[in-house]
Image (cartoon, rainbow, N blue to C red):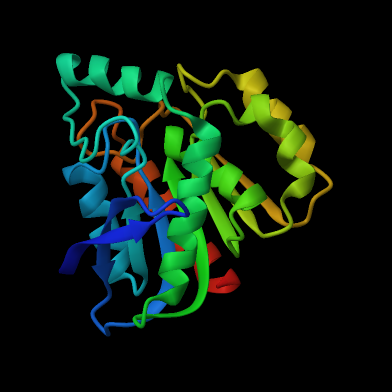
Length: 231
């Protein structure tokens, strides 16, 4: 893949990094890909390359840079403890500011044309939801975003198309939380909510025991169909 790390500047002059992956044609619509709690690791970079191969200019920003730049963790027990610590100490409003800046930088790249969407997993799913409310994206995709049910006061701010993917047997996101999201968006024509039977949290990540190839393939296809229609 044609990929590289780029600098993303902030309002106060500080820079943070983002992994940029370009499509085979060199140009396309934009996708801000938002990491899980393990950082912009090899899996997230591979997912960025996957969506780049699908024709998108993909930028995966380093969300944890204010705590430690370049977090790149594995899914083992030791690294996962560190990953949860980063998430628990994340300043989410600042992270949304950083992602808003990433959206702006992506729009300004010469390789970009068309709209810009956000797409995130787990913690990144929640951040993608918040991007839909605050970052000026044209669409958002949220994979099993933990904590969305606690942020439903933001739902009325979301005017762009938004796609939610939830796992039926998610041990982090209970069924009543998913039901609350469905209730909040039931009268909103811009929202699509998909639930995948017999799978657990993290079903899209092939580096985790919860990976489910069938659900991951279906969700990827629905995400591409959604993005293709709205960008």
